[in-house]
Each structure stands twice: as structure tokens, then as C-alpha cells.
Image (tube, rainbow, N blue to C red; front, top):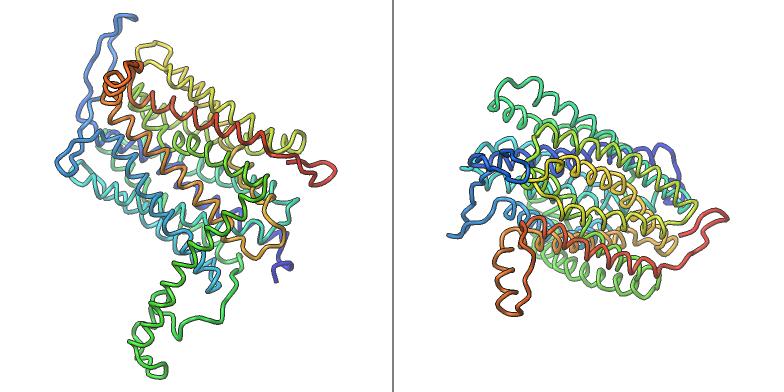
Length: 507
């Protein structure tokens, strides 16, 4: 069956179209409108500050601290910690759900579940209205993140199922291009509502919440095309319980007399799910050990882990950086991030074509070097500089160009390095996604920790080692710290050996 559907144009288009459906979350909720909205809601007021170097007054936001168990935290740090929690949940769930999907044979059903969780959570963000329900907003932010990233575990694993290696680079890039175009269209619609239809700041906040409703509806609606045409995959086992209860709600209300009664069936289900949990982590460990025995995969995965720490963390925190560090106006910030998305389309196509000339390894290396330059540049940004706005635009331009390229190349490179004709693609991609999420957990935690505790960290180093860290904001130092992870990623990717795929393609 799997051979019959490979390189099927309709199936490949349906797969790529899910990027069109779900990428609106990535842009509207993760990158642009929600972080800006969160920053506005958590800002108490703006104070005027005189800059002697320029002789001008600038506006500096004063934030409301968020109290958790009697301790006050910076709101940007709390947002970072909430992302850490969401990815921790995904890391725990991903291998279990992947194992269930392969066992029961309903990979597409799990993709649907997480898509619907993410879509409804986006709509739930409309209920986040002020500091009194900030934790409700953070809760829906977490569940939306779980829905988005949880669905990608199953979505990415379809790639080697539906396309041969020579088609995977182009198909992966096509998915990202669809995603960037779709998300840009929705952001333009939302931006028009907020900037041109709202007459007052209060109305702008209302239209912002409506944007969250649009995002969920877009994700839910357009994903139906994907779900209609994607086939189910999974190696269905014979050792299933008599009646699946927790994954088939209608079975909960049966008497199950023919199978020994409800208690007996429930007992079988509990044993089944416990074994699935055990087997999933055993399988993940086994797959990881297997992958790291292969030199190319070992170096690629090590590189992927380290540059993902930096790339994904910066991507998730960039908007709050622009708002908090240089207090860029909402409209300018959204337009900047919109241009990044358009650039990412160009980057995904450009680097996909460039890989045919110089190989995936060299393309990934180039993008990592550009990421390092962006981190260093962000560290030296100062809100007192009259040209800081244009410097921020320059950094954003670099990030936009490399974001699409490195994401697309990473997914397709991993797919091509996997053992050929394997039935374990969901598990392989589960490992890939778990590794990425662990990287994000590490990155967002370090970023949030530095934001909230940089002064204490500086004092500790001074007292214990007499080494004085530079006087700067925690967020700027956090951005600088990400360059270390990019450097490690660059180091490991250079060990990847060139592997002739065809007369014209190399890794």
C-alpha cells in the first residue's frame, strides 16, 4: 500500500496544505499578534526617559510583575517558562502517542486530535482580557502550543511515507512555502482589522482578540482538506484489548458482557496502555541508540539539537524582544515580522535550490553562521541609539532569510538520512521531534532564567569568581547566549559526510 501512494500529486498536495492550515498559529500566536498583545496587557504604563547621548526623550514600558506562589516574576520570563512547560508536555506525550498511532493504525486520527486542540485553544485566547485572567491566557497559550507541536510529530512522519527521497526536499520546501503564504494572508487581514478599523486602543484590543478567533477557525477549516486526502498509516497489531475504551468513547457506555464485563475490559485497557507507555520509551531509546550508531545521523542530530536551541528560542521570543528592548510600535513590529515571513518563503525556495549545487551540509552551515551574526547584533542593540529601529530591521531581515531555509533543509536532510523503506517513520520522526522539543525546553528555560535573574547571576559571578559580566539587560544577554549553541551546531554539522544521492545531489 505504501508504495502505491508515494509521489501521488493529490496526497503530496494535501500533506503540504496542512502547513497552510497550521502555520497561522506559528505567525499569529507565536510570532506576532499574541506576544504583542501579551506585552500590552502586562504593561502597567510607559514612562519617559531622557537620553543624554541624543538629547531626546524616549518611552520605556513599565511592566506588571506576575505573582506566582508569593514571588514576583518578570512577565516576559513567565511567558518563557510557559513555553518551557508546553514543550515539556509535548516531549512526554510524543513517544507515547507515536507508539499508539503505530500500534492502532490511526496516525491521521492523532494528527486531527492535536490540530483540533490547537485550533480551539487559539480561539480560547480571546477570553484573555486583562491581568486578572493572565493565567487563563497562559493556559490556552500552553495548550495551543501542545496542539501545534503535537500535530507536527505525526505530520512530519508522513513525509517519507508519501514521497521518495528525491522528492522530499522539494515537498518539504513546498509545505513551508504554503505555510508562509497562508499565514501572511491571515496576518494581513488581522493587521487591517487592528490598525484601520479600530478607532481607539480599546477597540484595537477587541479586534486583536477577534484575530485569535480567526486563527483557530482558519486552522480548523483548512486542515479538513488534508484530513480528507491523507491515508491512515500504522502497523496494526493483533494484541489489542477486547474493546478500546479511552480512545473510543462510545465503548465506555457499553456493558461489555460478551467480553467479561466493563471492569474486565477496563483492566485489559489499563494493562494495554501501561505497556504502550513502557514500550514507547523503550522504542525511543532503541531508535536513538540506533540512529546515533550511524555516523552521519549522529553528527546531524547533534548539530540539529544545538542549533535548534538557539533558532527556536529566538523565534519564540523575538517579538517580546522587539517590544521590551526597543519598545517598537505595534504596527511596525507586526509589519517587520510579516516581512520576515515573506523573506522566509524566498529563503525556503532559495536554499532548497542552493542545496542542489552545494549540498545540504553547506547550506545548513551558511544559515547557522548568519544566525550567529544575528545573535551578536541583537546583543549590541541599544534603545538609546537613534538608529536602533533600523538595526532591528536589519537583524529581522537576516532571520527571515535563514528561518525558512534551515527549517526546510533540516526536515528533508533528516528524512533522507533515515534507513530506506522503514516501517518506523513515525518513531523516527518522534525522536526527531522530541530532540527538537528538548532543545526548546533548554533554550526557553535559559532565556527566561537570564531575563529574570541576570542581576543576581552577575552578582554571583562577581562574588564567587571576581569575573564581572557586562552590564546589560537580561534579554539582550540571553540573545547573546544563544550564539554559543549555534556555534556548537556549526561544529557538528561539518562532520557530516557527503553522500552521493544522484549525479546532481549531495548531502
